[in-house]
Length: 335
Image (cartoon, rainbow, N blue to C red; front, side):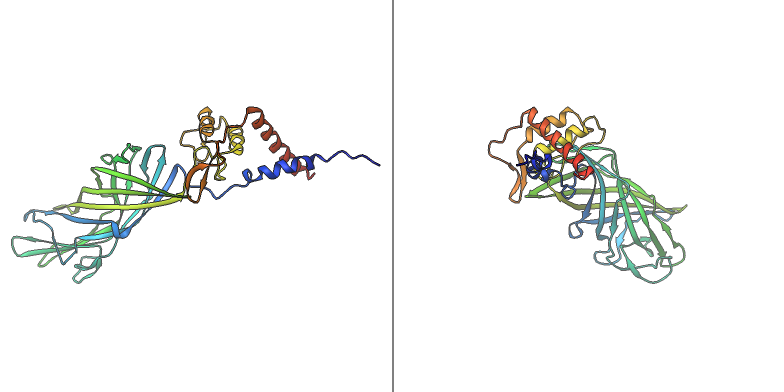
């Protein structure tokens, strides 16, 4: 009878079977970094008020018709989310929606057409100038804004800049009658924004609420200045898979596979998934150790993977790392 030495593959495969789930990446979870918030149209509206100033006076802007100085917004807001900070990035598209047909036409000629806003101002008691804003879109930019314990952040260094749009205007008699671009016109926001979140099992939804109260100066010609004050609220939401601190391989559980990932990446300048600090260092090991045994479940996040789960001994972790390396070499050589 010939004695055969068991194949090392047969010895390793049961171990591999137990660990294989840590090698198969799950769908990439949203994490700290660039994040887009979709504007909730029925909760986002901005009103326009102000004055038109020239040598004939400075009358207050009035609506051309019911609701002509208020409209809803759609689009998205681009941010960078890092730790407890939020930054607004170039690339947002905060788009005003059409709210009716208003005078004049886009080139300033007589007539009415679809517009985002429609206003008017009366000079000398009898000369009315109608104006209509069309294709208005803006973006937000800021540095890093700290989010406090109440989920608030200061907006006083956040700029709102129009990236597209024009204002057409026409007097009831004589001049002026023309249009001008509003692109590049900027106003600084005031007050505090709010970033709240709700966790429902595997899904986290963040809600971004931004109050708008800002002055914009628009000069359609050398003799006329339009002071536009925008007031209202933008509400935007982003949904993503709930992050689990220490789950560096994104398999929904903090386990030995995450230790292997940390060992492989230690010293790297690029943060691991579900890590809110810069680079890969000892703090990431501490995070993994703190959360070891936790997993995401359909009923909520942070449940125990095993009751009373404890961090494996260093020798056990080293064995896991060796086994995974061995399996990789075996697969490449076709054993």
